[in-house]
Image (cartoon, rainbow, N blue to C red; front, side, top):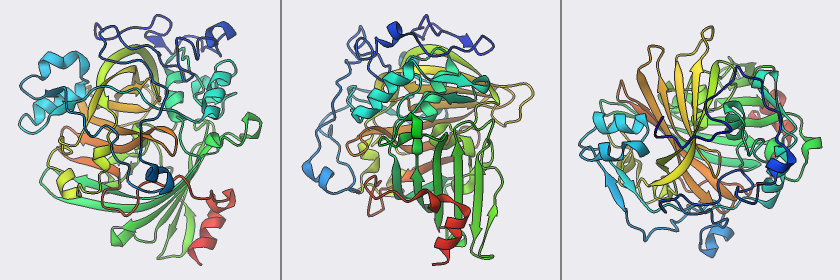
Amino acid sequence: MKRLMLVAACTAVSLSLPLQAKVSAEEAARLGQDLTRLGAEKAGNAAGTIPAFSGKLPDFPKEVYTSPGKHLPNPYKDEKPILVITADNYKQHSDQLTAGLIAQFEKYPTTFKMKIYPTHRDGLYDERNYTNAVENATRAELVDGGNGIIGAFGGAPFPIPQDAQEAIWNQLTRTGAFFTDTIYDGAAVYAKGRTQLARVRIRTIAPYQNLNNSLDDFKNMVGYQIIDDILPKRKAGEVTLIHEPLNQAKNPRSAWKYMPSTRRVRRAPVVAFDYPVGPGGLIYADEGRIFNGAIDRYDWKLLGKAEKYIPYNNYDMDNPELTYDELLTKGHINPEPMRYELHRVWVIEATKKADARHVIGKREFYLDEDSWNIQLADAYDNRGNLWRTSMQTMVIHPLVPGPYGRLWVYNDLSRGDYVVDHLVNELDEAERFDRTPLDLDYFTPQGIRMNVRR
């Protein structure tokens, strides 16, 4: 606990306590003053190793704005590491490392390393995201024991969180694009050296992020998603439709599947919790974007803030000149193009309830204070052993705009296998946010039937 810079208002808040509702107008007035309008501390740290929040985008060449889908160049490409952490010196920096990072130094002492770069706190969202977040601060509330929220739209629902449930809801509704339509690759890399590749087209529409609407228009659906399988060939043509309600304890996630062999759309099993998904089926449904879905199987504690080395400004990980063979090295992703920076993070602990079922017994999450994205997470089995560690790389994307989670990397520390999802290096285009959104009728079982038969 000495590693945590505890925040008095929210330290170790047990969810057995009464739930907090909203914050006062006086407290909300801090947003835009000593806090950013998303709730981060504006100032840097006392040591000068974390700068103040800049509130601007990095400098990108003009063609980034005129050529949507172009792989982003690295705006910090001329910077050099200020520190390289290896198995020889990681103990000297253990206060800034998570248990999962330490475990990788110990498991892969000759190959795993972390290149630490100067910290940048650049990033600018749409002005409406900030306006909504400020308004949410005095109107958003937890309902149904923390499993749902009301009074929130279009920005962080709880920019000044009072407990862990509020903080994790900021992750579940993190600021992002309203509509995306992109092809992604994924890879399962096995300890014995074999790599299994997958390719999908994903179309997602997120009504919570539709900044042309308002709270009055929002119908409590976080998102709709269509996943078209392209590779491997044995799965080509399969289509999965997912409906993501805001309150998944009250209204569970729904899924449908189209199978080319039957040419029918059928209701699919609930794709949630510890249902195996992803390349090789090596990750669980609620590990997408490191954590998603219902929160009712865990007890949640907000432990405060800490300074940790986290993946940030990872433009080089998406470089089209970097092949998958070069990136997907044995045991763990190639550490050479990886970039880590020292940032303040919220620390959340989730412990499985005694009467709940899940293969993960305890989870620790590290949320970037500037974006509410989970950057690192550790998972323990039901015997209390550290089992899995995951991370999400980050870029500041000028077309979202703002901080945007990119690759999801999941390491099984016991087996030595790992998964990387949302790869774009060997694709002609990177992510697209500019295409005309599809009508919601498309995101229905009937819409799937009509479009796969065309």
